[in-house]
Image: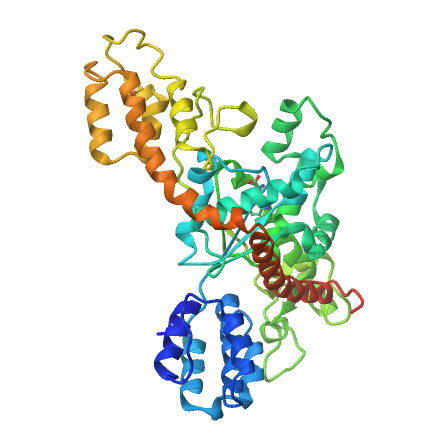
Length: 472
Ligand code: TRP
Ligand code: SF4
């Protein structure tokens, strides 16, 4: 079976097309451009390459795009072989997740989400986006930094190894389709569902420095539902706090399907071959309902009833996504509370080694360990939480042992932690450098991904508009 990554595709093509020079690490569109300037024989190759690239990225969700190929395969045997191999590869499940553009990311973001995204990108067809509209729901008074914060966050994604060749990166606000779907969802979503979302009341109570008693903030999880369902994501990698939002998304999908999904197979259930049009084995009141169905559209209640009685099947518009829980250990900040930019206790991915060491030096430890000679308890010490994630096993074992007997002091223990953490961050800084030197590159990656995402979003919205009977 041929894996769908472009790198592998390129190697596959290399093996089959000695006359064409290209390396898997190069950007495919550049190849295509080069090839198009080359000899005439390269033309169909370029064409197929472009399609394969798109198909690999779209993971062949939409096989129709291959219709365009039906003329091409005959041009060369390897091409048709490549195409049939690709067509035979089952699509990977799709994930989608977004992050509000909060600027430079910290270790909490890394452990709570980003590490997981990077891990999943090889297994899933991944979509990741900058949730800038979601940022506005609470931050509408201060949008000056939105652009820079978007850049910094996406640069950190790249620095951590999220790969734009594998995953699609995009910006929510560049796709008005999300707003349109959100609006249509708002027509069928009872207010109570939104008012009951736990984060809603919590935040209303907690956020006092600006007014979030707004329509937009109430709709926050519904906009999230639109994000997720737009791509018909199978799974949504999120932290614990977001699970109610995925739950709501499932309810919205079910409701939208019920209201606008097409009822199917009613006839085959209800009519026998010997007596077409005659309703079989259906209790009387329902029989009337069903008969009525053939003349007028059933009410929502009737639709639900058909479905509950197994008399009809619903053609689903949206699948129900699963939450893919990030099994994140809670990562404390330097003051021992949850790491958060707004608490001022964060260690950023971009922090230089001296900064990391300094932050660690002031980090709280086991509060019961007052003097150097007091034995400590690593289980209640935030520094040890960092060790557990970033240090080598032998360091973890040593601290776990020597802290309890006061053999190691907190100063030395923190130095060890800083050493391991800095070693972890060094390659991240290295990977970030080229983007800092060429900031435009980040915007190009987002532009590229936004284009790809738009294809999916447009397709979904075409289906949705049709289901709702809006004018084409
Ligand atoms: N609400 C998410 C958060 O604060 C961000 C988000 C917006 C999101 N849309 C999404 C996450 C869709 C997953 C899927 O972290
Ligand atoms: Fe925490 Fe390390 Fe001090 Fe133990 S020695 S209390 S683990 S900082």
